[in-house]
Image (cartoon, rainbow, N blue to C red):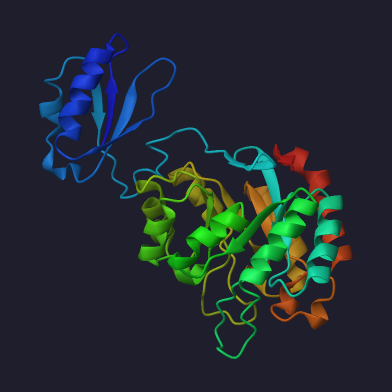
Length: 339
C-alpha cells in the first residue's frame, strides 16, 4: 500500500498516521520526493480498509500495490537504484558496468594475469569463484578461503572491487572480510535461510536468477534481502532451463525489460552461463547492451583449455579485449557510460 499526503500536509500529520500503522506492526518505507510526502506500508495490508485511513488529516491518495515484492517494486520507488561499489564504481541507471574474471580461482599467477588485462581494458570488478557448488561431487570445488584471500590480494593490487559466490550462511562473516559484492548463485536463489542472513549484511548482494525461476519468484527472493534491511541488490539474468540442449541455458533477454517495468533494481546479464559457449558471448553481450542492461558478468581465463571449470564458456584475453572495444564504441549509442 502506498499513501500520499497532501502538499500542505504537516510533519505532525505524517507522524500521526505513521505511528498508527507502526503500532499495528506495519513497516514504513519513506519514498517522498522534493514536493510531496509519499510512503509505502509493508506487511499484510489486506486487514486495512483504505477508506478508514482517509480519516487522518493530510491524506490525499491511497493506492494498493498488487505485487507481493513491495521493497523491490517500481511502485514503491520510481527512480532507478544506483549501487555504489566501495568507491570504485557503480551499478545501475545509465552506467554500463563490466564484471569479469575466471570461473574458478586456480592460482595466484592465473588470477593476477587475468586481472592485469581486465583492468587495462577498463574493467573495475574482478570475479572469481573460491567455493564452487558443482553438479558433480568429483569436480573441482575451488580453493575455498585461500581463494578468497587471493581474490582480495589481487583486487587490491589492481584497485578493483571483488565479487565471489557464497555457498552458505555460515560463511557470511568471511565473505564480508574479503569481497565487495556477495554473489548468490542460481541454485541458492530460493535458499531463504541464506537470503535472510544476507539481509543483515552491509555488502551489496548480486542475486542470480534460478534455473527455472519465474521473474516474480526472482524478485520475491530479492524482497527477502531487502525486507531484512539490505537495499543493495543487483539482479543477474544468467539463462534459464528450457527444453533446448544446444546451449547450456536459454538467455531470457526479455527479462531485463520485464524487471525494468516491475522493479527499480539494476539487472545485469551473464552471457557465459547462459550460452555455455565462448563463441556466442560477444553477440549476447551486445544484445544485453542494446536491451538496456546495467552491465555484464563474463568469464575470462588466460588458458581456457586448461581451466579447472567452465573452460568452454570462458573468453581468452584477446577475445575479451575485442568485446570491450565493441562495447566502448556502442555504449554512447544506447545512452550508457562504460565503467
